[in-house]
Length: 115
Image 1: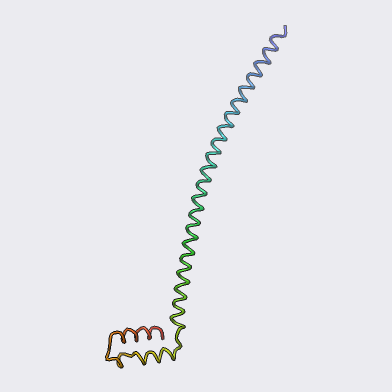
Image 2 (image 1 turned 120 degrees about the vertical axis):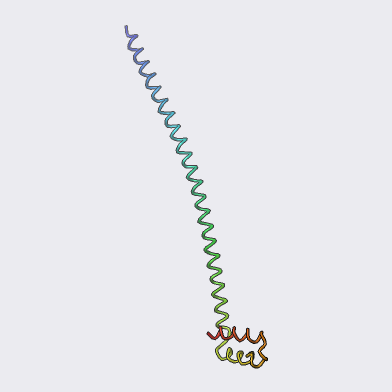
């Protein structure tokens, strides 16, 4: 007499279980996709981090070169006073050394330092 009720409840439970299994499979697929995207994002993030580190090193290298250049330029211009440069020029002037090439070159450098 009540067998059809039990059968209907059983079929309803089977249907609900099938829906839950499908939902579970969909959720598992979503998890796989998300995990794959996360790993891809993590890899891309690592690549970008390496680029940043490389650029930071390049900037530090350029700054160091600029600092060394500015120190070299400073030491070249501040090593001698104007009076000392004038004295050096008088000592190495080509007229006092029969126009020797080394005297000419040194005189040119001293004149560059004098500005």
